Image 1 (cartoon, rainbow, N blue to C red):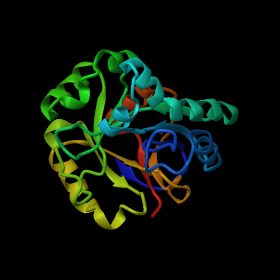
Image 2 (image 1 turned 180 degrees about the vertical axis):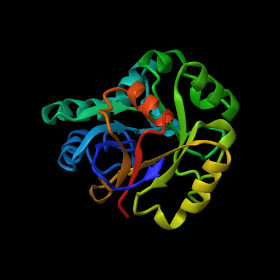
Image 3 (image 1 turned 90 degrees about the vertical axis):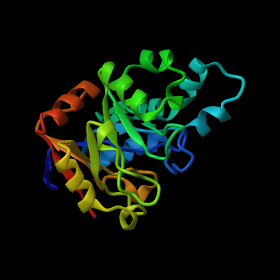
Image 4 (image 1 turned 30 degrees about the horizontal axis):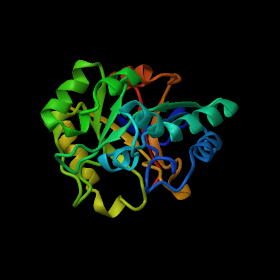
Length: 231
């Protein structure tokens, strides 16, 4: 995928809300406003789908916990509609078995309802389950030391450009891109936005609008986009 900063239909693939991600500093509604003002047409809310979040939701059923998890996304979606910004969601998952983070695109609510055990799976089981249900699995910041290790065997693609300014010195972009090419993986970018200064620094741009997660998956698999990287 070509890397460029030219203006097309800009898609933020990786952003967090203060309602759900403990390290998030921007509420969902404000995040949507900021991305609309930055000229993006689509925003994926990728709040942390971590064991720690669900353990904090005490005395709730799994369904109720999932509803709590989507609060940031729903706030962003409602605000985004005012600006013509398409807001979608895709969890950033961290399994109990390893410290890596994986962005999961294209799976419906019913998938998560049916799999309350998902975080306890090992990586091969997790990868197989996502793929068998039609999802696209992207490893976020796979070379961010010391917290991440690349697992090309388990994913469809790498986030080769993560433009969060607090991650830059910890990430080997050259290695990430080389491994993606070596293993024939899809290559994407994302801002990994948590704070105002992170917004709109990255993502992927396409020549056609991305209105659903399925649109995004098809466009990425077709390698029709260009990576946005403002660093």
